[in-house]
Image 1: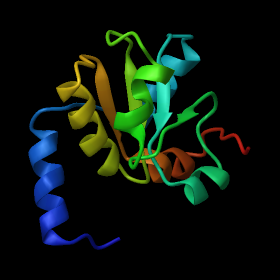
Image 2 (image 1 turned 90 degrees about the horizontal axis):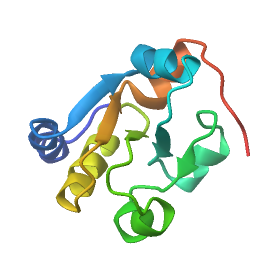
Image 3 (image 1 turned 120 degrees about the vertical axis):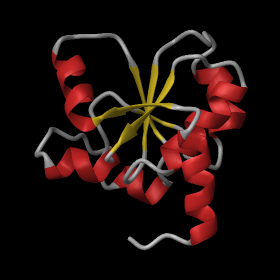
Length: 123
């Protein structure tokens, strides 16, 4: 997907501040039984096509409004993902500004996960 220059500037700025992980590392951690909260930041129609097993859905448009009700402990490790890792970086940046010190963006996102053949859930 070709993204607009202004959007990429925002994403690249956010990525200077956020922690990132990748699809393979997330899969390894989940397989090891590590306790993390997966947060799907994609839109409703994307979520409906499938999501990572056990993920919660807080799309980019509402995550800042609703995160404190869903995950009140700001020390919880959150792994955010979107289609490719751009929207999740923006969301992680905002969550960090809200005091969520362990908000991590998954580079590669849903595309990387499904291209690797990893399991998904459908609602």
